[in-house]
Image 1 (cartoon, helix red, strand yellow):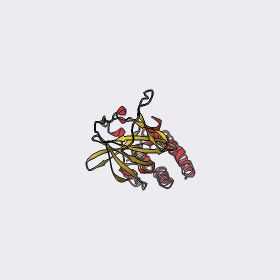
Image 2 (cartoon, one colour; image 1 turned 90 degrees about the vertical axis):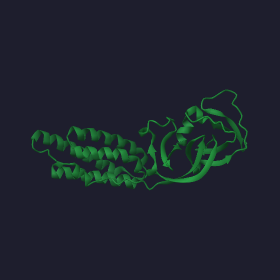
Image 3 (cartoon, rainbow, N blue to C red; image 1 turned 45 degrees about the horizontal axis):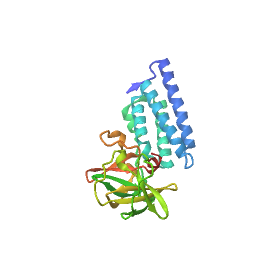
Length: 255
């Protein structure tokens, strides 16, 4: 535990940091609601990283660790109420530091973040060879194994061709061009999806059950460099001791 009011000059610097951080946190507490959540989340995350650096510079080890934990759990705070609650917790922590004049890991433990997401979504479980992934079921229109695949007049990176579907020519993504295993199976299926008005298809060897997932079950691909690097996959989860990837359809369409 460190008493940081032993030196007047150092004490003033540290009190200034705490006071300035407290004011910034209070600003976010007042602003965060349903309409501002999406816009403010990246700003809060960036600011928390800056606060962490300053906390370390000012020798607030407990606060620095708390802020690192806050940054890591930010994605689990998927509702305005949950983010608002944690910001209020941080405000109380900072107010306590200013009053008690001491920082410690024990003090930080009194303000533990409980960030479990309540958001739950339903996914379609698919396979391409031995690799597994899921697609949000809300974006799946139909699954078909009888449609012909036609090549494009000119080869386009990432596309295997088009299929006819309800009077439209639907592009089919070539997943193997993004690092997935090449399809060698004779039997395959087309998972036809729609995202923000754009229709497309995924060619898979098998579709399986529907899987319900909570956000807290998802793990980041960035923390597991051994897994394949695909621009439209940021998360995975463990099912029966196997890794199953989660497709981000927004990034897939933009790929």
